[in-house]
Image (cartoon, rainbow, N blue to C red; front, side, top):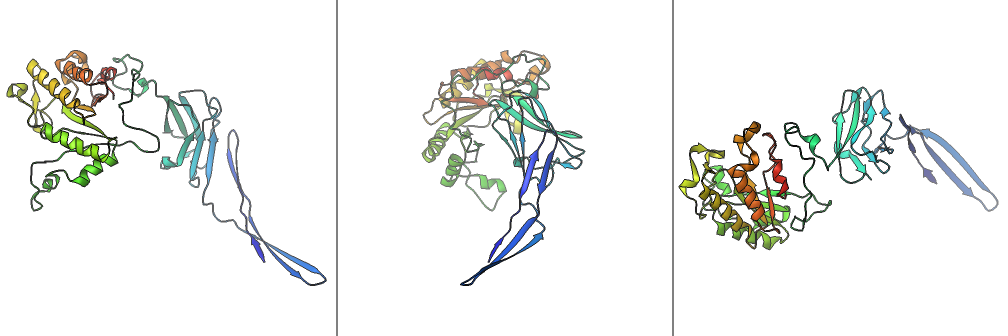
Length: 370
């Protein structure tokens, strides 16, 4: 006895609509009896309802210029569509907006992880825009960042960031792995006491399993507390776990974070003003302070276990609203000198792009790695 059940779902996309047609399942039972003289076959056919669809994919194939939107009187994307594939094989129109759905009920909670974009040209950025009666695929160019700016469109006139000349010193990268970074710190000189405040748990020497987690779960990290010798030793331990990991020195350009053994002088600090966490601010008008800051940053960038410097707090707030030239302040020149003086085979990155002030610090991209 043979029992066969088959359900067929056919999905057809036209220029304006998507139609899903489901045929009923047919169960056929065939009984065959054989005698020495004759063979008799009896067939019984029963029609049953199909099972609910367990998977349904809509494929949207763009033309050279876009797509004729799918129209619907219900919800879009439909709740029973488990995945959407948008194929850009033929698309050549570049940046623009393509309407995918037109309907009165927008399913704004649709999981974007269920949308795949395939076969598009390189150098494009995609956003899904929900409107009152449509869903649009917004296509932007990665070569021109102007359209992302709000506060700085009129005062920053450069069309795009300069091309990176060489990237051999960058972290290894491929699309199979999400590239992650981490910053870490610890009160390394404090003996942990589990009977005291919770912050004591983040104290004491770095454990081997902590070092291994930093090294193997991230592409890049920065660290800069305690003495230079301690920082270098920590870098070496990280490198022993994964030589590919990029280690960077954390170096704050605005306030003194309490790093010991680096020759800080009281005259290098401002009087009566404090920064993040009540830390004392540097006096950038003191040329000795700037020379000391630059020399220490360069020294740490040149260590065998160092892959660069991460510079924090890089803006000059006194220049907001074009009160002065951001690029020519003592602080900005000091930061640029570190970036240009560091070896070519190490990274220079930092908190450079700061949207809260006019201009956004974008001029730094001319000499920084990111």
